[in-house]
Length: 241
Image: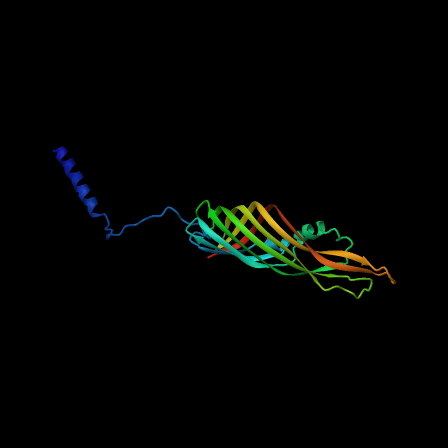
């Protein structure tokens, strides 16, 4: 009898518990273990950014990057160039043998800049984490040179046009930090090759053999071409959407 009562009690308990299970009405709940952090760029496909360090080299492009999938993107940039503060030390201050006693002055003009860079994000998180990139970049700087023509202080030559054209290919490594609310910070470094074509004003003098034996200056341009290793380092502030 004791065993019968125990079995009967167990059956009643199982029946009662089966009646209290709520109906799910055919709905299936799925729980995703991945929860994007607040301000994450997950799911964003577009990015616009600028490089604040560009002011040091007179390079002012706007960058647009488009994500294809979750790991591959292409970044395009276009803008203008102006006075290259760091570059002028190399292209004019160091290679211009006449810079110490020259009678001419430079005025800087607007040039152009553009680049293209396919990227692969190693973490596959769309504008987050580390990435590898190949970058082609073009920059053109333009200057006008006005020279002192002779002993007469009011005499100046017509402007001579100078230019510096730079084309580089680099292999870059970068890392993107999420700042929140769509804003990101992108650090990058790279190594590669750069071709330069420098069209530079040069000065020659001509001393008259007749009275009043004046000295006259003639200005022309000299073109120098060079290919050399180059590096790239910088950071961008961007917005994803």
